[in-house]
Image (cartoon, rainbow, N blue to C red; front, side, top):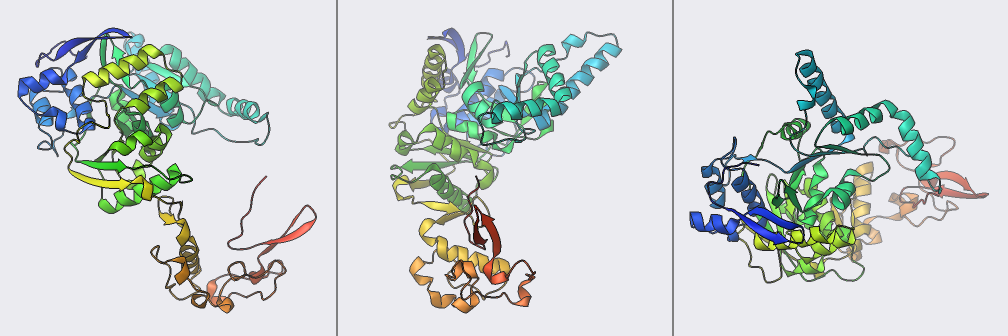
Length: 480
């Protein structure tokens, strides 16, 4: 926090959390005679950070004025100081080792090792080293946790020491949850308070899917380990002022259509539009019909469509989620009052911000779909799965001529049996029975080699509960 206040934007706000100081964008807007409340909400969050840190070591008045004139400032490279850092164990352990080495160096020159601490709050969540040795049992969690501590005892003891030794550092133990779940359910505050000053909860993380937190209205994205360590030690994250793509959602999902169906549709639209290195911000009355877990699912997929940020503004659903996840009512009141006063709270009547470009999706038009057949972000409508699977399968084996119905736009009716004569189709795709009637052999050019145990057209023979079955391409197998 800086003591200077060049725009005279610091004021007080009374909340259930008590009286806090805030940096008012209304005051800034009056000072510069601008139009900051028409810029995207995600840009306003960045702008608040610049106003609060202005006059210090990294942010100058001209940086604030430039960002306030967005989109004229797109392409500039100001210094952003996030509120906190989140790490998983793969990057968090080396970072803690570096801090310990710095303390050792300080001690060797006669200094006070206790002065070496993260300058920005850091949360380390242990989840990437977790293994599963037992499942399907009430004892599984306890058993797996014991094995984890046995395997990683030295590392975990070191991290426990780090949590006790360093200020602004906490370690979340294994068997608590994945980093994004812990971040969303336990660590997120939406509005932070430090030294009596309230400000938006922003972060960088060492996982590309850190953007999942943006479903809660918190601006945050993944960075490299070096960048995260720099922020941890009080250095800014230098970023290009982004273009912001507005994505308007209207309508509501039909019954039976899932968040996965929606996110695959959104991902396909954004990949086609091109959003690499840009912010995506969602708006529109459809957000009032989109629960927070669905928002988090969409935000989580930002790396798949290439956006730096995938932001959902704070609204009534955010407040309901905070209450539902056990947050103190005073914090919920602080979030509501702060975001409303700061122009960061969305309602269906909120005017549309100025965006670089916009897209629109009526969620009632989204149908059931599946991902694939090759990449998880590729959406295929459920009705097209038959033709798309057959075309992709043929291409993978290099066995058939080009499938005339391999396109996702081909209707199921067009995928006639004449396109794939029974004599050319693998047993599992040609209606061949488990008894192997009319079984087909692959040609030698397919690269599949017959063995004494496997007849290629009949699949692999397996025995289950005393009964023989065959598993072939396209078979569905359920583990137990």
